[in-house]
Length: 418
Image (cartoon, rainbow, N blue to C red; front, side):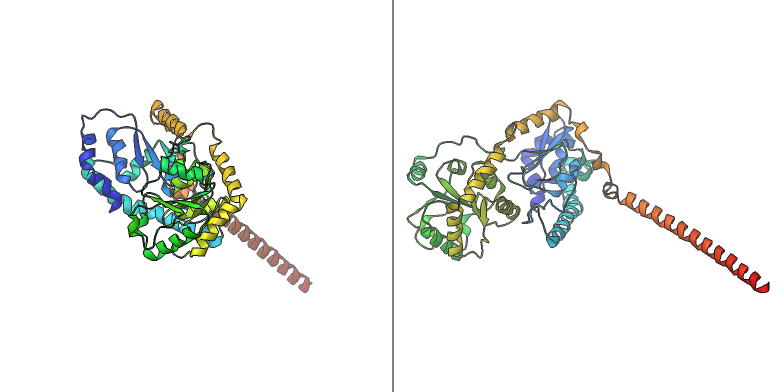
């Protein structure tokens, strides 16, 4: 089970933290994406902790700081939706988000709580109680690169923290390529997706398309060149490793063909480079959807796109000036901040330490039951009062009506006798 793997596998590394004689720690950082067993560390060390959310819009992260869960326009991180969802998208978004929260709480956290108790002792409070003491969450979002959402003060956006304003110079071979070509295409599927594992049929489509693209292409190919199903085109430079930020920062980089990873989208937005994206899984669909909504690129389905579709998409993004114009616009928005994301992260880290966990930032919403938070009890009480009021009103009307009818009947009988 991947979710509980780190604690059990790296126990020999973490074990010295379990020693009662370990030094006092001022703060603990914990990843919030299904590594919940690690939440036990700040409790064991009696230290405040900050949650790190590497994706956008993880539903339970919002709950931990009392953020409103607005499924009508805030898409789930793994749903390929924008902020303007139709009825069925809002329906699926709601069901998926609520279902994900319930599965995490009643399945994953139960399993991980058992693992944590094994190492931290049976007297440890449940993880779902410990996590409610979280001081702050660093969230990997920004309106330029992710959909926006209502936010509490202890959920801090730090998207782009890893971005280098001035990346290192390019190696000589890549520098020569970038300088000798006015428009260059970067084709990179990130560090997790191995391009050498792509099935042969898809590789042939990609290589044939790149061969016909009228631009120099820099391609991250992590396999051996002689293992390619067809010869490498002469306009394609392949390398097992590429300095992606340095390439994106170059003025001759005209298009980025990407899988849609969030960090890659942040980098290309920061440097103002339009994209052609084909998401594979996770948050990549949402990231590419946001990029297309912002007008900085086009989206393709990786397992079905044709050679011509890839060629036409790359040509469209490069030759149509609106994509570059929008990319530059979003770059300016992303850069226009009071401080860098790294400086913001440092400030809030020190802030939490200075104020002993910053409990004053904690929303009372965290302590409410779901029916209190959504005012279900208030609505139910209001409906009950309305029902009682209507019932009393109807009873009175009925009584008055009977009284009047009875009196009228007696009057008519009297008149007949007379």
